Length: 70
Length: 242
Image (cartoon, rainbow over all chains, first blue to last red; front, side):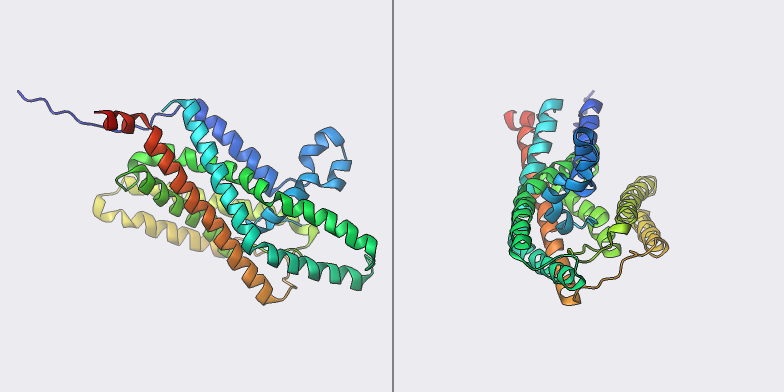
């Protein structure tokens, strides 16, 4: 009786790793694509929406990558 | 593959591809941004909102240096973000992708994602340089853009899943279904509400450079993650050691 071995290549990455990368994806996308002072407002309050520090830092990439900017 | 190693190669490949994207933008997109901001300044002077004086130009230089200095850094942050999505999709779809090794598989997936979550949404809502866009509509435009990316991305995923249930000689119906679906979405989704007031040759050249920049990211991230996966994946390591 011959034994046939099937070699199956499995991609085995944990759900925790997938979840961690999903969070990194959402956070990074928000920083570059959509922040209008929201992140720094946690620390600086309303002034962050005037200063737009992250918005200005990501301004050129935001335009170049196709995100609406202002 | 161990979780920590998987996360590390995904983040590093995204950061490297993002740095390439930022550097390419620095070379080919920045001149168009400067031109567009120049027009924006002229409009401010003409409307009386700003005065053409040394103080204005000192402030302008200061914030333009800050904006330009963020190009590569923002590229790396965006690269890590999009690279993370790419890594997730690659890990979940690797066994279904065509190609003999991980570089080929990853580059093919990068091409599919470039088309479905970048180029097709771009055709509906193309990039605009500064001076185009009303600040009052930025939230609406952001919602429309991200919605179309999600519609196209999940649509592609849905029709791929559907095609898996079809016989091999009818799998093309999955692609056909996606094409019909996205054409309908293209016409149903509202237009960008803002009028383009800048010279169209500037806007079109900016858009072309923008596409080249983003394309450099997708080629790079596919190639780099594929190389890392080839090198570090357990199944490849055991094959190489046997």
